[in-house]
Length: 326
Image 1 (tube, rainbow, N blue to C red):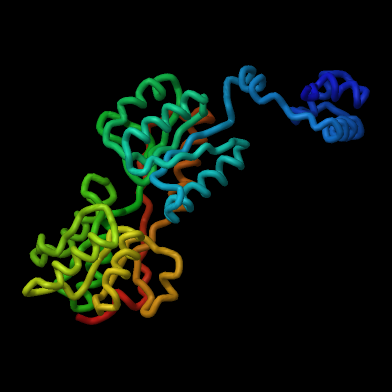
Image 2 (spheres, rainbow, N blue to C red; image 1 turned 90 degrees about the vertical axis):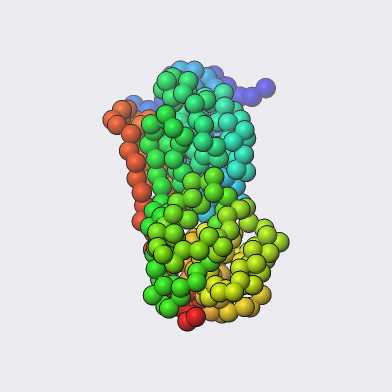
């Protein structure tokens, strides 16, 4: 049998209410008495009944986070920042990966809600979030991060300046003499991929050539095939802009040392140690996670003001690969 508060009270020689005050961090207990209670808790191995505590408070002290892939360094950094904020507020973070599958996203959100999480932070995989309406109407706050929710859902959002970052990368290559700039992006149905394509196209203006664009999920085989096709054109590209960190690494492997200038969206580990170092547009996943979590806990503390929409800036980090001449 697990030890109870009564067992602790008996072992410490105090009243049950005294044990309750010590366990819940309430004032009004003599320090020596409190120490005796804590010693009894340690000896007996007592732990608080969280289920009963939840029933009393109406809160579970948990929040749910849905991301694309916990193994992706970008989302790992975002998740860690959310967790740090949650810990400061005495909450446990539950995390799941959608794998870019809308059905999996819905399943994770519904599972978290069935466990009565206090709030949700979602990196959406799909474009229809009407399934969330009952939870929002019931008072469960949600914050969308990295990508906005689908139409009809007005909630707090935290994004990066995706289009601005793509313009920055493309203009950097143009400034170094390039006019034939290829773009490898993720599937165009993904919000971030579409915004980065928009920024790339806007920066090129009349220089834009549809034949220099590939938009599909990254893989070594498809990247190599796309680059081979582009390099075989009568006017091949002299530079390449990649739409995310995985695509940058995939493109580096596919290029096999061919001397294209390169700028990638998203920084990645060891990018500065390659020769030349990889020029990138760096986001702030930790900042995005912190901002989203802080918004969520503000809502949990009673802030019922209008939804907020934040777009965090990005920055260009020149390291050599994006400064190669044509």
